[in-house]
Amino acid sequence: MAASGAWSWSAPIKLSLGSHTIKLRFKENNVDSEFSRGFVIVAAGTGGLPAFSATPSATPTLTPTATSGGLPVVGILTPTYALFIVGIGLFVAGIVWRRRLLVDSH
Image 1 (cartoon, one colour):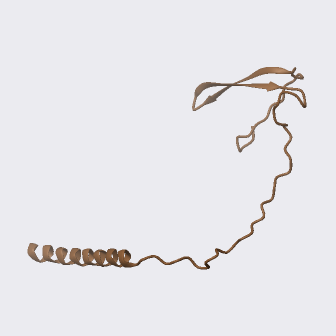
Image 2 (cartoon, rainbow, N blue to C red; image 1 turned 180 degrees about the vertical axis):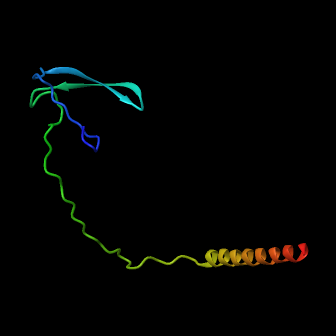
Image 3 (tube, rainbow, N blue to C red; image 1 turned 60 degrees about the vertical axis):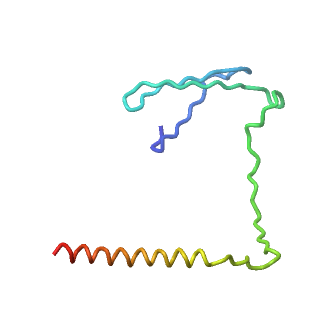
């Protein structure tokens, strides 16, 4: 097994067409585990399955397009300003409240 954890295995005999099962037994964290999967070997051009050889990958071509109106329309800033003022108010109120607690405790 490679340091990356990758491994490979080839059957010592030529497998016949049809259904087969591969069963793996391994130890993980000192626990014996078993894993099995079925697979089907079909003759080329039969079975309706995709080919096992891949075609070259497609290369995407990006073509940026501008919107018809140019820049997007800016929204209303009133809620932003309102939340900003409330946040500043809470921040100042917290400082004043803390100073009063410190003055009252001494």
